[in-house]
Length: 438
Figure (cartoon, rainbow, N blue to C red):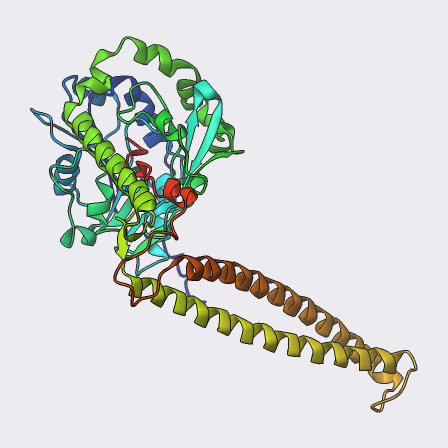
């Protein structure tokens, strides 16, 4: 008898966890606990922490008893983009996973991100475009996003180290740094399960006051969720983490002045610049609507694009072509549906003693019953497809009708803004989504 072959041991890529921190002492022990709870093999992890705060946490690191930590204290404050680049320079892993210092990360945060990258070989980066924020004072869970298949906030990033050969952060970016790093959201990307990625808690020391997001929420990207904190922090051994966020954090932050947003003047300055830029963008769009300016196309996560009359005509022609294709598909499906119904009727008549069309005997009744069931199921599928296509046609027809009645001919040298109504103008007001996890 030959010897039994040993079972092949599962290979775990070496992972570098990266955390930038600045004056977040009240959160650090909770951050340590989130790392301890990770179900990824600890011998396949290193944890890079870069600290440029005025209240260094080297004493807490020394007492943490977490050998994976590699702590780097910077003598002066750096913009977040520069700090992330410094983190990367110290990593050794083939995969890099971000874990911020003030958010909740579930035990499968690392393992889930690695699994998604390993099972999607073409993807260089993973993250969640859909994240959840819990507003404790409002007792309200808010869903943010999803914004797009290649979009995510940095607090959910996990990426292959090879990505750093083609991109880096803007050293001057103090917030909203994701877009440049992902090359305007063109990097090959795979989405993560938001329930396995992060839960953000709104607190008084957030650099970006997340409550502002609720003042004029975009209905497509910000909405109240029925999800609960218990659904995220669900493991019995996570009781101390839940207690920290739900009960203890407010008292800990109350007297901790180093963590106040005013301690980050560079971030506050950039926030004001971004808010002013976006307010001006909104003002221009409203002005164009009232005075008759160019048509602007606004897409989530991208700058507005000015459309020429020819661009609008091309869009309408594309919609016309798609409508024609849908009409052909619906007609074809309706023909198939009619034929299958006719077949079904013939078979049912044969079985019930109606007008015979073929040689039907008792011996093949079972076969006919199977065929009836099959045809019935196919009919239901076809009916569903017809209804779906008809709905799509109706939507596209409405869009086409709206555009065709509001757009001037391409030969007219003056572009029209009639197709931008008040509702669309409000939707063009961007939300500072890139700062959700700050």
